[in-house]
Amino acid sequence: MKSKDETLEDWCRALLQALELDGVEVDVNEVLALAGVAAHSVVRPAAPLTTFIAGFAAGLASGSGQATDAVAMRAAMGVARKLANDYAANEAPGA
Image 1 (cartoon, rainbow, N blue to C red):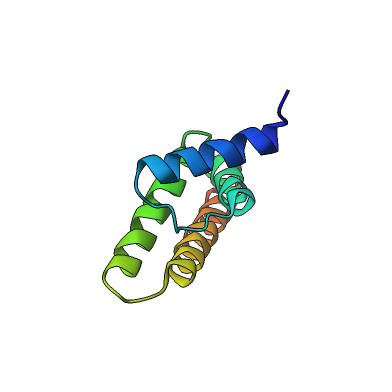
Image 2 (image 1 turned 90 degrees about the vertical axis):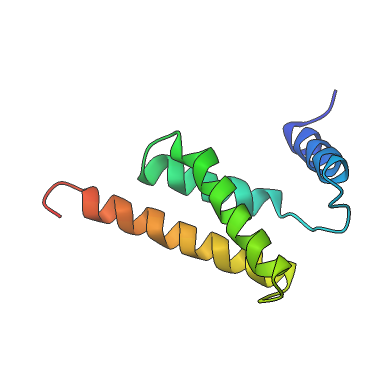
């Protein structure tokens, strides 16, 4: 039986291949960490929404030549993480 990490890595590879993104590197742990920040800082459903939008933004930046895939993904995930953390701080009682 595969571990959760092995299953996620297999799924990631299969999905990338199905979407013809074979050369794209995805740091599964970073994506999951971003999802966790969004889920705990905003609301749970913000996790998939945040990761989707960050990925979409990274794809646009990379596809337009503004940045390499890796730089675009790091930048988009960084912006999303900061925004989620700021959101939580601004929504806290007394903020």
